[in-house]
Amino acid sequence: MSENILEIRNLHATVDGTEILKGLTLTLPAGEVHAMMGPNGSGKSTLSYVLAGREGYEVTAGEISYKGQDLLALAPDERAQAGIFLAFQYPVEIPGVANSVFLKAAVNAQRRARGEVELDAMDFLKRAKAELAALEMDQEFLSRPINVGFSGGEKKRNEVFQMAMLEPTLAVLDETDSGLDIDALRVVADGVNRLRAPDRSMLVITHYQRLLNHIVPDHIHVLAKGRIVASGGKELALELEEKGYAAFTGEKSAA
Image (cartoon, rainbow, N blue to C red):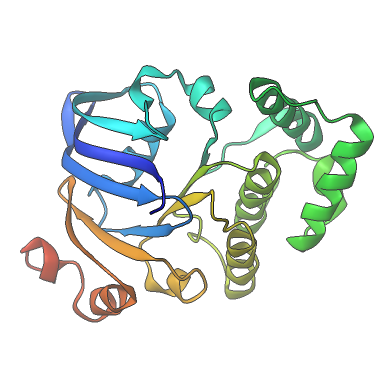
């Protein structure tokens, strides 16, 4: 029986005094990819930020266990060092900081936390170039400031590149498919699939079934009004595509 990487029990969380998550429960075993779908405002991004420890997102009840330890007791940097990665829906621009400088510092910070030898410049560059090639990205990305002047597709590829370099145990992808054309979607999905591993779990948050044609999840969950209202396999995504979220939320579709 596989280890559970993530266990969320009866999670309640507020943002600016408004309760967004209202009793969410989820288990994510090692080696599995789960997709989270739901309408706008259902709490998908809130869940991703709570897992990453973003400031302003207050957990008022419930528990989150990550590899058997209390995730809520860890600071954001400790969560990253423990192997949690969040790919943002809207990656921020950081002028003046080259991708290579940022990633080398992040990779070596994690290696230090794990008691591993840090990568020197040559080893880092060799590995980075290999990952860029796999993602069909130009090596100039290493010298460019983080996300500055990047297209939507380039930003999302850069998120997957960072994930590949950091080798997380738990990867949370918050609408990585938003703003991507068909070719960019394929490249990003291929990059994610290449990172599937028995000791790594992924939570893929998306609005659309089209991403799941490329990243086939082990399970799909529907989030509505702050809690999971349905779970299933690939057929659930197809049902959502056909009937919409109203069939699961009990609300009437907008005209």
